[in-house]
Amino acid sequence: MTTDTRDRAAVEKELWRELEKSRCGMLGAGHVPRGHFVPMTAFAEPESGKVWFYTSRGGDLAGVGERGAPAMLIVMAKDQELQACIRGELRTTSDTLHRDKFWSPAVAAWFPKGKDDPNLVLLCLTCEDADVWVSDAGMLKFGWEMAKANLIGSTPDVGGHVRLTFP
Image 1 (cartoon, rainbow, N blue to C red):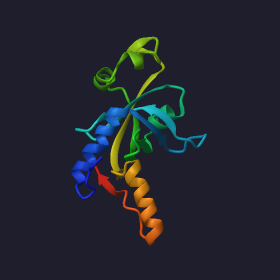
Image 2 (spheres, one colour; image 1 turned 90 degrees about the horizontal axis):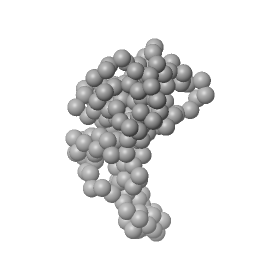
Image 3 (spheres, rainbow, N blue to C red; image 1 turned 30 degrees about the vertical axis):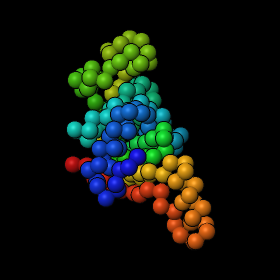
Image 4 (cartoon, rainbow, N blue to C red; image 1 turned 180 degrees about the horizontal axis):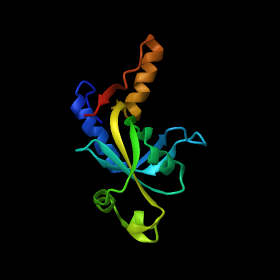
């Protein structure tokens, strides 16, 4: 990845691209009784600054979402060149437009009664801000930077950090 961390728009674009590509993240909201984040399939909507999730009615996140709660979504790129923590508010919604927009055979496998399955809950994370770390350090550069830092007492240059805010 060659995203310049001084270019906030490019970092934001890369964050949404990665989320759309991987569709995976760890979601946590409110005071989850078990105190853990949950792996979720994320459906990004960059134009609105929202991320959508399907979940089951009996789950911790569905209960928290009914009341509305602060939430965080952790995203880690498979190639390890982007890591992010997105913060916002999580709410359940009965928005049939978005329920239908992201519906797929993979989602249907979890909800055998289809889009009208009584256990189906649609969650929406309205993103407020994100901390994003980007790296252009492939294995060779990473090794070089570690060796150089240890030899001359410098800090390795393997990427940067940006805090984004969403409208």
